[in-house]
Image 1: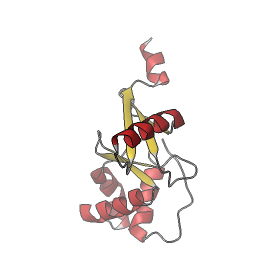
Image 2 (image 1 turned 45 degrees about the horizontal axis):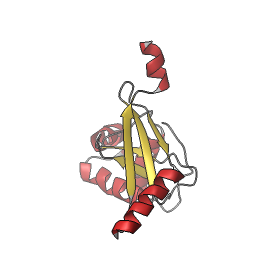
Image 3 (image 1 turned 30 degrees about the vertical axis):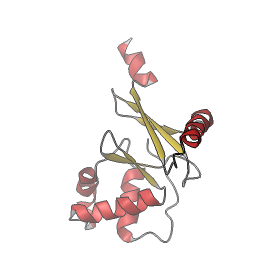
Length: 138
């Protein structure tokens, strides 16, 4: 899932380092994975990583995968996506694909409207096997 964005100029040093680690990773990283990768850059405490991740997630530059307790860089070309964000997570190789689906988003919005529910964020995680892992199993 390696993905690269121009690093916004207003990120702190730690935020930039954490975003760089996520951008260059082939898969999701836990906060401790990130800390291990960035120790040589001066990050020593988990709190430094968690603070940076909180800000990156808040800005839409990174996403937390709840089921994995891990983080990925945003793969949306426009970032800051509001509404439905969905992830397909391969159980075989760990690859994560980010996508959006207007039909699902509309249906969830209709349901929320009918129930009087105010949606603040919607994240879907779909688990299964990617095409490459399926081909290897065949």
